[in-house]
Image (spheres, rainbow, N blue to C red):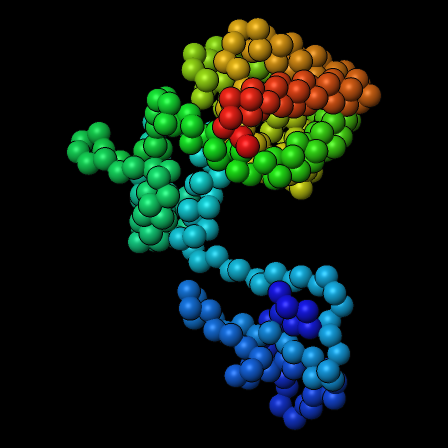
Length: 299
């Protein structure tokens, strides 16, 4: 945004009110407003009229109001990214989705078209038809695509790894202080499901389930949302980690140690175990990325 421009929502001034000299214009005039082509709503950009510039570094973001079908698509996308709905699984029927979201079927259909265009779901006809989460091929092209997606956003990846190392140990501490029996049950179920998993997508889904269960044990919706966001954005990168029994056993040991600390309400130990767990995951991920870089994929 250019210095001196400050986006503000369009609003009407009460009749008879006058604008003070030198203040930002708040009415929608041809020189102070823009029209959003996508939504038809007018957005105002308030321009200072006294000739002074806005403070350097001011970067307000325009408010983006999601339409109903965009909101539905985003919620489904979130579940897919968190592997709460796995590749190859079907979504609920359109009528059921409409009831779950409290919208009409046309809205659901629009949302599914968006997801299909993005390659996240596919529609199948026939008796066993429906809308299914797209399966990822295991060929070299799919693997290369995954690597490129991770490496193209390496700055964001660095930020996420740092954010995770700061927040997850604190989440574990709060969970140990606040957990309830139902939270411990959810953690145990996730650990057992990880051990029983026969495919890597299944394993990753239950790994995510465990970390979200720890976050929910805090009783803090903001912390839970933060962990969901971290898992969603790190999923591609985490998929690059080795699929080995040694790796899986280490994760299981760390999860079990964390569960024991939370069950004992030992906040110090829970924080320490989570800190080590996150550090181990980051170290393994960096080793994988370094190997990729040596092969010349990341330049």
